Amino acid sequence: MKNKIALTGIKPTGLPHIGNYFGAIKPAIELTQKYDARYFIADYHALNSIRDPKKIKEMTYEVAASWLACGLDPQKALVYRQSQVPQTFDLTSILMAFTPKGLMNRAHAYKAKLAKNSELNRDPDDGVNMGLFSYPVLMAADILLFDSDVVPVGQDQKQHLEMTIDIAQSINHIYNKELLKIPEPIIHKTTQTVSGLDGRKMSKSYDNTIPLFLKPKKLKKLIMKIVTNSQTIEEPKDPDTCNVFALYKLFTNHAEQEEMKKKYRAGGLGWGHAKTALFEKMNEKLAPFRENYSKIITDKEYIDKILDEGSKKAREIASKKMKMLKQNIGVGF
Ligand code: ADP
Ligand code: TRP
Figure 1 (tube, rainbow, N blue to C red):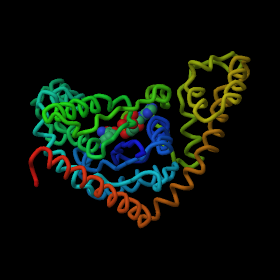
Figure 2 (cartoon, rainbow, N blue to C red; figure 1 turned 180 degrees about the vertical axis):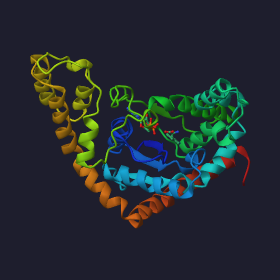
Figure 3 (cartoon, protein in one colour; figure 1 turned 60 degrees about the vertical axis):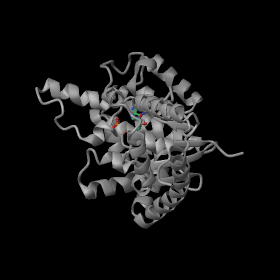
Protein backbone atom coordinates (compact mmCIF):
# COMPACT_ATOMS: atom_id res chain seq x y z
CA MET A 1 0.00 0.00 0.00
CA LYS A 2 1.19 3.50 -0.79
CA ASN A 3 2.44 5.45 2.20
CA LYS A 4 0.67 8.56 3.27
CA ILE A 5 2.29 11.91 2.55
CA ALA A 6 3.55 14.42 5.12
CA LEU A 7 4.58 17.80 3.74
CA THR A 8 5.79 21.04 5.21
CA GLY A 9 7.48 24.20 4.00
CA ILE A 10 10.18 26.07 5.85
CA LYS A 11 10.88 29.70 5.07
CA PRO A 12 14.58 30.50 4.72
CA THR A 13 14.67 33.07 7.47
CA GLY A 14 17.89 32.17 9.26
CA LEU A 15 19.21 29.70 11.76
CA PRO A 16 16.63 27.86 13.83
CA HIS A 17 16.21 28.20 17.60
CA ILE A 18 15.13 25.76 20.24
CA GLY A 19 11.45 26.68 19.75
CA ASN A 20 11.69 25.85 16.04
CA TYR A 21 13.38 22.56 16.89
CA PHE A 22 10.80 21.28 19.37
CA GLY A 23 7.82 22.88 17.67
CA ALA A 24 8.60 22.05 14.07
CA ILE A 25 11.84 20.21 13.21
CA LYS A 26 11.71 17.33 15.69
CA PRO A 27 8.05 16.39 15.14
CA ALA A 28 8.51 16.63 11.37
CA ILE A 29 11.55 14.37 11.48
CA GLU A 30 9.61 11.87 13.60
CA LEU A 31 6.87 11.80 10.97
CA THR A 32 9.35 10.50 8.36
CA GLN A 33 9.20 7.12 10.16
CA LYS A 34 5.62 6.59 9.06
CA TYR A 35 5.05 8.92 6.13
CA ASP A 36 6.59 9.70 2.79
CA ALA A 37 7.83 13.15 3.63
CA ARG A 38 8.31 16.21 1.45
CA TYR A 39 10.06 19.02 3.33
CA PHE A 40 10.94 21.99 1.19
CA ILE A 41 12.48 25.43 1.50
CA ALA A 42 9.80 28.02 0.74
CA ASP A 43 12.07 30.49 -1.02
CA TYR A 44 9.32 32.12 -3.12
CA HIS A 45 7.40 32.85 0.07
CA ALA A 46 10.51 34.48 1.49
CA LEU A 47 10.79 36.78 -1.55
CA ASN A 48 7.95 38.84 -0.10
CA SER A 49 10.29 40.15 2.54
CA ILE A 50 13.90 39.28 1.64
CA ARG A 51 15.27 41.11 -1.39
CA ASP A 52 18.95 40.54 -0.86
CA PRO A 53 19.96 37.73 -3.27
CA LYS A 54 23.03 36.77 -1.26
CA LYS A 55 21.02 36.59 1.92
CA ILE A 56 18.20 34.46 0.57
CA LYS A 57 20.71 32.08 -1.02
CA GLU A 58 22.75 31.78 2.16
CA MET A 59 19.67 31.28 4.32
CA THR A 60 18.43 28.55 2.01
CA TYR A 61 21.68 26.68 2.65
CA GLU A 62 21.46 27.40 6.37
CA VAL A 63 17.95 26.05 6.70
CA ALA A 64 18.69 22.94 4.63
CA ALA A 65 21.88 22.31 6.62
CA SER A 66 19.99 22.80 9.89
CA TRP A 67 17.39 20.17 9.10
CA LEU A 68 20.03 17.71 7.95
CA ALA A 69 22.13 18.43 11.05
CA CYS A 70 19.12 17.71 13.28
CA GLY A 71 18.77 14.28 11.72
CA LEU A 72 16.55 14.63 8.68
CA ASP A 73 17.44 11.69 6.45
CA PRO A 74 17.22 12.67 2.76
CA GLN A 75 16.54 9.00 1.97
CA LYS A 76 13.34 9.25 3.97
CA ALA A 77 12.20 12.66 2.82
CA LEU A 78 12.35 14.65 -0.38
CA VAL A 79 14.15 17.86 0.50
CA TYR A 80 13.87 20.52 -2.19
CA ARG A 81 13.63 24.17 -3.06
CA GLN A 82 10.13 25.42 -3.82
CA SER A 83 11.65 27.48 -6.66
CA GLN A 84 12.90 24.31 -8.35
CA VAL A 85 9.40 22.88 -8.71
CA PRO A 86 7.78 25.19 -11.30
CA GLN A 87 4.55 23.16 -11.25
CA THR A 88 3.92 24.90 -7.93
CA PHE A 89 3.46 28.20 -9.75
CA ASP A 90 1.40 26.63 -12.49
CA LEU A 91 -0.94 25.25 -9.83
CA THR A 92 -0.95 28.61 -8.02
CA SER A 93 -2.33 30.26 -11.18
CA ILE A 94 -5.07 27.66 -11.43
CA LEU A 95 -6.00 27.99 -7.75
CA MET A 96 -6.18 31.78 -8.13
CA ALA A 97 -9.15 31.35 -10.44
CA PHE A 98 -11.04 29.55 -7.69
CA THR A 99 -9.99 31.65 -4.69
CA PRO A 100 -12.43 34.34 -3.57
CA LYS A 101 -10.73 37.65 -2.86
CA GLY A 102 -12.78 37.83 0.32
CA LEU A 103 -11.01 34.73 1.64
CA MET A 104 -7.65 36.45 1.24
CA ASN A 105 -9.00 39.60 2.92
CA ARG A 106 -9.39 37.51 6.08
CA ALA A 107 -5.80 36.20 6.19
CA HIS A 108 -4.03 37.07 9.46
CA ALA A 109 -0.74 38.34 8.02
CA TYR A 110 -2.53 40.64 5.58
CA LYS A 111 -4.95 41.87 8.24
CA ALA A 112 -2.07 42.57 10.62
CA LYS A 113 -0.41 44.69 7.93
CA LEU A 114 -3.65 46.64 7.35
CA ALA A 115 -4.03 47.25 11.08
CA LYS A 116 -0.45 48.49 11.30
CA ASN A 117 -0.99 50.88 8.38
CA SER A 118 -4.14 52.21 9.98
CA GLU A 119 -2.34 52.69 13.31
CA LEU A 120 0.39 54.66 11.54
CA ASN A 121 -2.16 56.65 9.51
CA ARG A 122 -0.83 55.20 6.28
CA ASP A 123 -2.66 54.16 3.15
CA PRO A 124 -4.18 50.68 3.81
CA ASP A 125 -2.23 49.23 0.83
CA ASP A 126 1.10 50.66 1.92
CA GLY A 127 3.76 47.92 1.73
CA VAL A 128 1.22 45.26 0.73
CA ASN A 129 2.46 43.38 -2.32
CA MET A 130 0.45 40.73 -4.14
CA GLY A 131 2.82 38.09 -2.76
CA LEU A 132 1.71 38.94 0.75
CA PHE A 133 -1.94 39.19 -0.24
CA SER A 134 -2.00 35.86 -2.08
CA TYR A 135 0.48 34.10 0.24
CA PRO A 136 -2.12 31.49 1.25
CA VAL A 137 -2.74 30.51 -2.41
CA LEU A 138 0.92 29.74 -3.03
CA MET A 139 0.94 27.76 0.21
CA ALA A 140 -2.18 25.86 -0.88
CA ALA A 141 -0.40 24.99 -4.15
CA ASP A 142 2.65 23.69 -2.23
CA ILE A 143 0.38 21.39 -0.28
CA LEU A 144 -2.15 20.27 -2.89
CA LEU A 145 0.45 19.57 -5.57
CA PHE A 146 1.73 16.58 -3.59
CA ASP A 147 -1.56 15.06 -2.40
CA SER A 148 -0.46 15.77 1.15
CA ASP A 149 -2.28 13.85 3.86
CA VAL A 150 -0.77 15.66 6.83
CA VAL A 151 0.93 19.02 7.19
CA PRO A 152 2.90 19.54 10.40
CA VAL A 153 2.85 23.26 11.22
CA GLY A 154 2.80 25.67 14.12
CA GLN A 155 -0.41 27.18 15.43
CA ASP A 156 0.29 30.35 13.41
CA GLN A 157 -0.22 28.43 10.16
CA LYS A 158 -3.59 26.94 11.11
CA GLN A 159 -5.56 29.54 9.20
CA HIS A 160 -3.53 28.95 6.04
CA LEU A 161 -4.35 25.26 6.25
CA GLU A 162 -8.03 26.03 6.66
CA MET A 163 -7.86 28.19 3.54
CA THR A 164 -6.10 25.40 1.63
CA ILE A 165 -8.91 23.03 2.62
CA ASP A 166 -11.53 25.60 1.57
CA ILE A 167 -9.99 26.10 -1.87
CA ALA A 168 -9.53 22.36 -2.47
CA GLN A 169 -13.07 21.52 -1.37
CA SER A 170 -14.53 24.15 -3.62
CA ILE A 171 -12.63 22.79 -6.66
CA ASN A 172 -13.64 19.20 -5.84
CA HIS A 173 -17.22 20.35 -5.50
CA ILE A 174 -17.25 22.24 -8.82
CA TYR A 175 -15.89 19.25 -10.77
CA ASN A 176 -17.76 16.74 -8.62
CA LYS A 177 -14.57 14.68 -8.24
CA GLU A 178 -11.76 14.39 -5.69
CA LEU A 179 -9.21 16.16 -7.85
CA LEU A 180 -7.37 17.49 -4.83
CA LYS A 181 -6.58 15.62 -1.63
CA ILE A 182 -7.93 17.36 1.48
CA PRO A 183 -4.99 17.77 3.88
CA GLU A 184 -5.03 17.64 7.64
CA PRO A 185 -2.90 19.97 9.77
CA ILE A 186 -0.84 18.44 12.57
CA ILE A 187 -0.34 20.91 15.37
CA HIS A 188 1.52 19.59 18.38
CA LYS A 189 -0.08 20.66 21.62
CA THR A 190 2.68 19.81 24.10
CA THR A 191 5.61 21.48 22.41
CA GLN A 192 3.47 24.08 20.73
CA THR A 193 5.02 26.91 22.67
CA VAL A 194 8.58 26.77 23.91
CA SER A 195 9.23 29.78 26.09
CA GLY A 196 12.09 32.15 25.41
CA LEU A 197 14.62 33.94 27.62
CA ASP A 198 11.97 36.36 28.90
CA GLY A 199 9.24 33.76 29.40
CA ARG A 200 7.25 34.82 26.34
CA LYS A 201 7.00 32.50 23.31
CA MET A 202 10.47 32.00 21.93
CA SER A 203 10.53 33.88 18.64
CA LYS A 204 12.94 35.73 16.38
CA SER A 205 10.50 38.62 16.47
CA TYR A 206 10.87 38.95 20.26
CA ASP A 207 14.65 38.65 20.22
CA ASN A 208 14.45 36.12 23.05
CA THR A 209 15.71 32.99 21.32
CA ILE A 210 18.32 30.37 22.08
CA PRO A 211 19.77 29.46 18.67
CA LEU A 212 20.36 25.73 18.16
CA PHE A 213 23.99 25.73 17.08
CA LEU A 214 25.58 28.18 19.53
CA LYS A 215 29.09 27.43 20.76
CA PRO A 216 29.13 26.35 24.46
CA LYS A 217 30.50 29.66 25.76
CA LYS A 218 27.80 31.71 24.05
CA LEU A 219 25.13 29.19 24.97
CA LYS A 220 26.05 29.47 28.64
CA LYS A 221 26.06 33.25 28.49
CA LEU A 222 22.59 33.25 26.99
CA ILE A 223 21.21 30.76 29.49
CA MET A 224 22.46 32.99 32.30
CA LYS A 225 20.19 35.71 30.85
CA ILE A 226 16.97 33.73 31.38
CA VAL A 227 14.63 35.86 33.42
CA THR A 228 13.86 34.50 36.91
CA ASN A 229 12.30 35.98 40.04
CA SER A 230 14.35 37.48 42.85
CA GLN A 231 14.10 34.61 45.35
CA THR A 232 17.23 33.97 47.42
CA ILE A 233 19.25 30.75 47.26
CA GLU A 234 17.73 29.42 50.49
CA GLU A 235 14.10 29.88 49.51
CA PRO A 236 12.17 26.85 48.18
CA LYS A 237 11.18 27.41 44.55
CA ASP A 238 8.32 26.37 42.32
CA PRO A 239 9.53 24.45 39.26
CA ASP A 240 6.14 24.68 37.55
CA THR A 241 6.28 28.44 37.13
CA CYS A 242 9.98 28.67 36.31
CA ASN A 243 11.35 29.51 32.82
CA VAL A 244 14.57 27.66 33.52
CA PHE A 245 12.75 24.48 34.51
CA ALA A 246 10.43 24.72 31.49
CA LEU A 247 13.50 24.49 29.25
CA TYR A 248 15.15 21.86 31.48
CA LYS A 249 12.18 19.58 30.87
CA LEU A 250 12.83 19.60 27.12
CA PHE A 251 16.32 18.20 27.54
CA THR A 252 15.90 15.65 30.32
CA ASN A 253 14.06 12.44 31.12
CA HIS A 254 11.37 11.97 33.74
CA ALA A 255 13.74 10.83 36.51
CA GLU A 256 16.05 13.80 35.97
CA GLN A 257 13.08 16.15 36.10
CA GLU A 258 11.78 14.65 39.36
CA GLU A 259 15.23 14.96 40.90
CA MET A 260 15.46 18.61 39.88
CA LYS A 261 11.93 19.32 41.16
CA LYS A 262 12.97 18.02 44.58
CA LYS A 263 15.96 20.36 44.60
CA TYR A 264 13.77 23.31 43.68
CA ARG A 265 11.29 22.57 46.44
CA ALA A 266 13.89 21.85 49.12
CA GLY A 267 15.50 25.30 48.94
CA GLY A 268 19.25 25.84 48.71
CA LEU A 269 19.23 25.80 44.91
CA GLY A 270 20.08 29.22 43.49
CA TRP A 271 19.17 30.40 40.00
CA GLY A 272 22.83 30.18 39.01
CA HIS A 273 22.83 26.46 39.94
CA ALA A 274 19.61 25.80 38.07
CA LYS A 275 20.90 27.58 34.98
CA THR A 276 24.22 25.73 35.08
CA ALA A 277 22.35 22.41 35.30
CA LEU A 278 20.24 23.46 32.33
CA PHE A 279 23.32 24.50 30.36
CA GLU A 280 24.99 21.13 30.96
CA LYS A 281 22.01 19.11 29.77
CA MET A 282 21.32 21.40 26.84
CA ASN A 283 24.91 21.49 25.73
CA GLU A 284 25.20 17.70 25.91
CA LYS A 285 22.12 17.23 23.71
CA LEU A 286 22.94 20.00 21.24
CA ALA A 287 26.65 19.21 20.77
CA PRO A 288 26.12 16.54 18.07
CA PHE A 289 23.74 18.84 16.15
CA ARG A 290 26.27 21.64 16.35
CA GLU A 291 29.06 19.43 15.05
CA ASN A 292 26.91 18.11 12.20
CA TYR A 293 25.89 21.62 11.27
CA SER A 294 29.40 23.02 11.14
CA LYS A 295 30.43 20.19 8.79
CA ILE A 296 27.38 20.35 6.53
CA ILE A 297 27.26 24.14 6.09
CA THR A 298 30.79 24.22 4.70
CA ASP A 299 29.86 21.61 2.07
CA LYS A 300 27.52 23.53 -0.22
CA GLU A 301 28.03 20.95 -2.96
CA TYR A 302 26.57 18.28 -0.72
CA ILE A 303 23.56 20.46 0.13
CA ASP A 304 23.04 21.32 -3.55
CA LYS A 305 23.16 17.63 -4.43
CA ILE A 306 20.45 16.81 -1.91
CA LEU A 307 18.26 19.74 -2.96
CA ASP A 308 18.74 19.01 -6.68
CA GLU A 309 17.94 15.33 -6.29
CA GLY A 310 14.92 16.12 -4.12
CA SER A 311 13.71 18.72 -6.60
CA LYS A 312 14.06 16.32 -9.53
CA LYS A 313 11.92 13.70 -7.82
CA ALA A 314 9.45 16.34 -6.66
CA ARG A 315 9.09 17.63 -10.24
CA GLU A 316 8.32 14.12 -11.49
CA ILE A 317 5.53 13.69 -8.94
CA ALA A 318 4.24 17.21 -9.50
CA SER A 319 4.18 16.87 -13.25
CA LYS A 320 1.91 13.79 -13.06
CA LYS A 321 -0.42 15.59 -10.72
CA MET A 322 -0.66 18.64 -12.97
CA LYS A 323 -1.33 16.51 -16.02
CA MET A 324 -4.22 14.78 -14.28
CA LEU A 325 -5.62 18.05 -12.94
CA LYS A 326 -5.38 19.91 -16.24
CA GLN A 327 -7.04 17.07 -18.13
CA ASN A 328 -9.92 17.17 -15.70
CA ILE A 329 -10.45 20.89 -15.89
CA GLY A 330 -9.97 21.08 -19.64
CA VAL A 331 -6.80 23.16 -19.96
CA GLY A 332 -3.28 22.43 -21.21
CA PHE A 333 -4.20 19.30 -23.19
P1 ADP B 1 9.87 32.68 14.69
O1 ADP B 1 8.65 32.98 15.54
O2 ADP B 1 11.09 32.61 15.54
O3 ADP B 1 10.01 33.65 13.53
P2 ADP B 1 8.95 30.86 12.68
O4 ADP B 1 7.68 31.65 12.56
O5 ADP B 1 9.94 30.93 11.58
O6 ADP B 1 9.65 31.26 14.07
O7 ADP B 1 8.55 29.35 12.97
C1 ADP B 1 8.99 28.22 12.25
C2 ADP B 1 8.33 27.00 12.87
O8 ADP B 1 8.70 26.83 14.25
C3 ADP B 1 6.79 27.07 12.87
O9 ADP B 1 6.26 25.78 12.66
C4 ADP B 1 6.48 27.56 14.27
O10 ADP B 1 5.20 27.23 14.71
C5 ADP B 1 7.55 26.86 15.09
N1 ADP B 1 7.88 27.65 16.30
C6 ADP B 1 8.38 28.91 16.30
N2 ADP B 1 8.57 29.36 17.58
C7 ADP B 1 8.17 28.32 18.39
C8 ADP B 1 8.10 28.17 19.82
N3 ADP B 1 8.51 29.12 20.65
N4 ADP B 1 7.63 27.02 20.30
C9 ADP B 1 7.22 26.03 19.45
N5 ADP B 1 7.26 26.12 18.12
C10 ADP B 1 7.72 27.26 17.57
N1 TRP C 1 3.91 29.64 5.55
C1 TRP C 1 4.80 28.75 6.25
C2 TRP C 1 5.52 29.56 7.37
O1 TRP C 1 5.56 30.76 7.31
C3 TRP C 1 5.80 28.15 5.32
C4 TRP C 1 5.14 27.33 4.24
C5 TRP C 1 5.10 27.63 2.91
C6 TRP C 1 4.45 26.09 4.43
N2 TRP C 1 4.43 26.65 2.25
C7 TRP C 1 4.01 25.71 3.13
C8 TRP C 1 4.15 25.31 5.55
C9 TRP C 1 3.27 24.54 2.94
C10 TRP C 1 3.42 24.13 5.35
C11 TRP C 1 2.99 23.76 4.05
O2 TRP C 1 6.06 28.95 8.28
